[in-house]
Length: 92
Length: 251
Image 1 (spheres, rainbow over the protein chains, first blue to last red):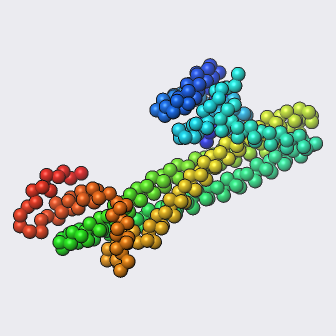
Image 2: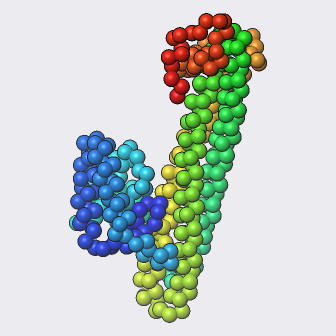
Image 3: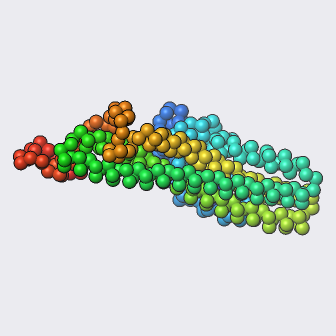
């Protein structure tokens, strides 16, 4: 699975991570809905951690699309409200 | 895919596929696509230059304020040693305000610096991808039938397109932030023009009004604290030691 962190580039992750990311994303959406900023930040850093620990940066000469595009690392809670909504990262 | 980044890449993708559909000859499409990519890269350079300009302006303001802080601090000490507590207080009020503004500008310069670095890294990545696209298009033109070429073109174009969309998003964020900082820089300039950071030797007849506004702007408690500390440092003007102030810790 190819994941992009907006502003940082693309990473190749094992497909199993899709489920973990999606689960965290759903919880992040819930946190944003409840206005729980601390909860959101915690979940967001867990998501970034998965990409950091499992991901390998895609080489610059590969021209492929990402399955998942994550927002910029330094996303504010305000921005997150526009970003984290709906059905999760990977549509069914 | 929901989310801002997802939406953006959808917009770019539909633009790319419209572009691909329009051209009859895949070779032509490829050349056109490449040309568009190079154009975008030029815009990115301009965007980065804008960020650098804003940063320089803030840096200049910061160093100006820094000089004023030092000057006002010295003046407060001088005033105090001459027994002019009123003037010392005035200078400290100005110093407090200048310091607050300086710290906030400093923080913003740091943020801009981070953004500038990120944009440069993004630009380099996009440049590499565009270069890769250029190589790929020649291979596609030479090796594939028209139908097959279409498929491969769209793969490559979407890959580059996503990169471009993402860079567009990063640029937008940087621009928004720069806009906020411009407003901030202008506000500081207004204060400067009003004489809020002027040193106390240049005070003219119209200074009463500025002084009143300053007292409102700066925290009285902070100025009181600093004045007390300064008094303790300089030492008592008379013979007896001020017992109250000696208890204060230096921080």
